[in-house]
Length: 296
Image 1 (cartoon, rainbow, N blue to C red):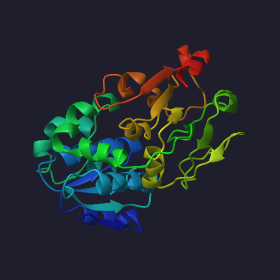
Image 2: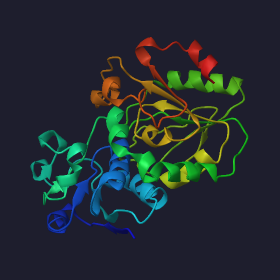
Image 3: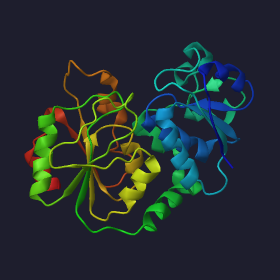
Image 4: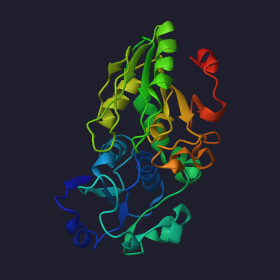
């Protein structure tokens, strides 16, 4: 059974991680989701997770719902820092310094806090979810939910670095959805220090599902659901479900983009991913708004 703990200070971290097989999920939610799915399917031994508050809900959601037996994760510890590392990055064993998924069988022999990482487009190659029973648990979670028939759309306009497209971009999409009788929601969170530009567009409603478990109960409970957003970590979990997904990639120069690496289609796309369903990825540089009429 997984135990959960909240630290009052990052000063507690060095003594905490002296014992045990510890992994850090300090980046975005998509990285955290993929790392936990990988560790549950491939880690040969028990492990522990250290994560920021922004990723806790997603980590717990996976451990609570998609492990065929007892989770391999025994303990999840949340440190009080949304961005950045709880200890010096030099003290963390990074994938760029030699630890990646292919070394999982020896990783636990390194008595250091570790990060396991792969390009988002490649995670499915390492996770083996179909052979370990995890994929069946995901499908079972969706299959056993009652379905609302109404045409429904959830918008995810904001990335984890708070970057959004201009309001006019989303207003045009909302207008097209209204023409086709969709009920339109914008999902919002309680993480005002992470998602700093959350807004509800005219003609939409606030879904407000800050807990990932509540959000996905809503997702799998709708039969005619369309999800639209710019590429962010939420789609690393949405990709497993039947709902249609339209993902926008901002592959054009934007002077106000905090983290341009989040827009790298080459490392983050889903086009070869065997677990992905009903997914359409559109680059802004080639996007024609008329295409949306055909998709929705």
